[in-house]
Image (cartoon, rainbow, N blue to C red; front, side):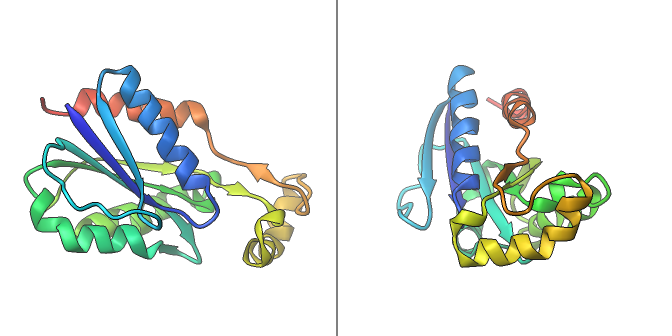
Length: 178
């Protein structure tokens, strides 16, 4: 079985998640290719049985590259198994998690009704005010929330649950029709 993970990332969090998913799938015996759509194009989709499409979320939106991939390839992958995943701040907040799942995963799935989505993963993000002006602005907007949680908004934080990411990837293997 072969899987292709394609993703878009703004600050690298989704890239790291994609690599961890790939590592977990490989441990389960699946051959995996990983492509950062900002840096590479995928020309040949043949030979893949499973497609994982992921994105970081910023300002409430997927990155444009995975959206383009889905739009361009919906027909080509409609007879394949697809999993969607995102890395976003809303996943870190139990009160916002259901809304984030609906907004970022369920709505994306509904845009492509011909795709056979077998699983959706919602993962936390990584915040680093040293990652550039835009990230500092995002963290300023989160200042109050972070301080209420007892966190210093001037320091980086990793809200990704690596065990949950690995567990999702491992369960995905069980869902895949071989």
